[in-house]
Image (tube, rainbow, N blue to C red):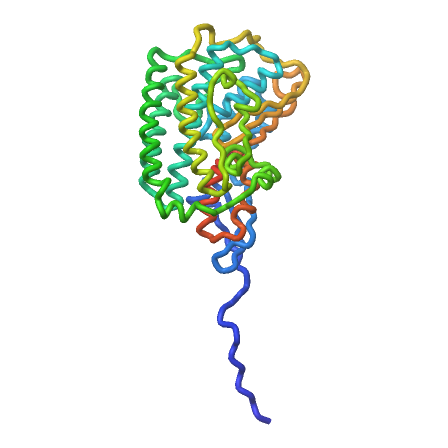
Amino acid sequence: MTLEAPRASTTQFDTDELVINMGPQHPSTHGVLRVVLKLDGERVIDADCVIGYIHRGIEKLSENRDWTQIILLTDRMDYVAAATNNLGYCQTVEKLMQIEVPRRARYLRTVLAELQRIASHCLWLGTHAMDIGAMTVLLYAFREREFVLDLFEEFCGARLTYNSMRIGGLPLDIPPGWDKKVLSFCDLMEGKLNDYETLLTNNRIWLKRTRDVGVISGDEAIGLGLCGPPLRGSGVPRDVRKDEPYAAYDELEFNVPLGTRGDTYDRYLIRMDEFRESIRLVRQAVEGIPEGPIMGKVPRLIKPPAGETYHAIESPKGELGYFIVSDGKSTNPYRFRVRPPSFCNLQGLKRLVTGHLVADVVALIGTIDIVLGEVDR
């Protein structure tokens, strides 16, 4: 019997799919997000988001707190845009109780909400650019964000979790000269936006990393439940401030920026335009602040009538909605539920990353602008 020599393998590479974890401790996942990636080489063929690492049970906690105490808890969801969390919740209770908010308070709320949008977008721009490799923009954007935090600190004494609103209005009126400082900041910020765009908008590396990356059509975006800049980047003109005006937005002029390609670059351009629209809104609101009280007629013990309601606002990340149920007897909500934009937009990540390279996953997590405190709650 003769022994045959072993045949040489005809395959040079192992073609099995590779499954890897990205996160939950990863600098580019913007919190404790774990993405389980299935790879063919460096190309993503499937992805699964695993959440819940920072879950604190805010919704259930809120059902065991009185209506005023809940404002503190809303700060802790999107903790880089606490003022808009406060605003959405307070307006939901006001809607249920049919409380009339004074016009001065509505204008000041608009100023605070748009300053918060600018601060949130500064953090988004800096971290998104750093994820892709542009370090300088992070330093610039955080420099301007500090000015907004200084304004909030002067108004309410806090820089991150503000507790800045009350059911029926505001806890405090603005300090003397605060409005003039806000207008000075608007002048400063306009010039800085030009610096950001000089660094990024026509930068060939930035264009290579963002153009035609994560393209999603308007119909797909609607089907996935996307909201905010990711939805408007696909050309869908949905903005709660326009469609269902609240605060003083029905008395102010502004445009809703829309994309055409639905890619990462379009979503960047939209947020840059939103910077300018926010500055425009802040100027109008500050210059039009009326005289009068900052609190409406609210009972000392807040106990809404039996019923339920849903109310949404346009937070920096998209449509932030609150659903609350009152039994009419207790000083606590019977049911408290949040519709957070970060959670809804995260549903689109699997669709966005499939077919792209591992390096593009970082850019696509940044383009939807998530905060895990809001995703997990």
